[in-house]
Image (cartoon, rainbow, N blue to C red):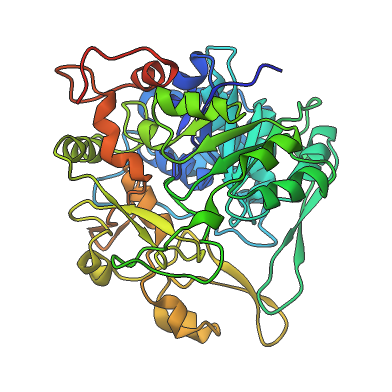
Amino acid sequence: MNYPRIIQGGMGVAVSAWPLANAVAKRGQLGVISGTGLDTILTRRLQLGDIGGHMKEALAHFPVPEMAERIWDHYYIEGGKAHDAPFKSKPLPAVKSGKALIELTVVANFVEVWLAKRGHTGLVGINLLEKIQLPTVPSLFGAMLADVDFVLMGAGIPRAIPRVLDDLASGNPTELMIDVTGGEPVATHFDPKPFMVRELKRPKFLAIVSSASLATILARKVTPPADGFVVEGPTAGGHNAPPRGPLQLSERGEPIYGERDQPDYEKFRELGLPFWLAGSYGTHERLKEALTVGAQGIQVGTAFAFCEESGITPDIKAQVIQRSLEHHAKVFTDPVASPTGFPFKVVDIPGSTSDPVVVENRKRVCDLGYLRETYQTPDGKIGYRCPGEDVDDYLRKGGDIEATKGRICICNGLMATVGMGQVREGVHEPVLVTAGDDVANVCRYLKPGQSTYSADDVLDLLLGATLATSH
């Protein structure tokens, strides 16, 4: 197949939503939706009144109408909920999720991909995190029902995903082993038969990796192998791979990356599979550099995160673009913020969780549960805990007090960033904005006299169309 030069990064939660992926795919590049938390995103869009009617349109195309109708009837609020009213909750992910949550996860992923693919014949992918294991299989299946073209996955070693994709495309039941702290892995099972109305296309699988050694495992020691790789460097946004070797921190408290963390392009070329480079590749010159070392192209996230089509609220985008113009936009690679244990990039924005005072004043609660750790309880059962939850609750579940220090609720913070934050007792969740180091330069995509820029503007610059003036 003809692979794209540009992959638009799959940024969660709902930053890389369907409007952005749709716009990029229409230009012949790979538009990617974030699959993280789409069940919550769908329910909250419906509770906000389904602005524009897009959810209703996509739900009408779901192949099992009664499932779509149940979700609509349960969550839709005509005219939208009151601004200070809380969102209705949904079941949390579990090893043995109930029928309602499985259906919701499948339908939500179908909706997002269907909308991203509407109106063109371009390529659309879905990005998922290996660390968020519980909803993975129904998420993949929902995306495949909408004919997703690519699956991209990182934040771990997604060795089982190619097999799962084969199973789902064949209409066969499948399973995914879930890591259990203090116990043996357990299987989560999924049977596609209740949803199957036709044979499904098997999407290409691109693993997001930081080293050639991991890529080699997924290319040569996994059956079936990955179809290609996104090679992500430590300047990319969101979660980063930790530095190789002992963790050392800079004077600012950020992880120090060294020579061992630089990808070996020769080894990637030897694998014979297409690869894209990611992490501060937001210019045409960087695209040419990537092609020179043998890459198929580049993945770009941060540039698209603040364009008009992204899901970040307009006021946050305006703040970040203005700070970029003033040379004040910066990120902090926080070694402990994420409950996953991976370094996580946080954009410095007043009033957000980049401010330790805001974090301190927030009541710790884990009510979305995507990053919860699955663990074995003393009586041998499966439990769930998160170092970002209430400290007493976490300790009661056998957690270590040290693991709670500096943690931020990533799930709730990212929901707030796209205008869907929870409200508790009249208090709105503070936002959490993540981006790569290149956030300092997002003003480069502005046309003269403009205060916003589009996905087209980003693609024009990346592919070689020049702006009339530079900033």
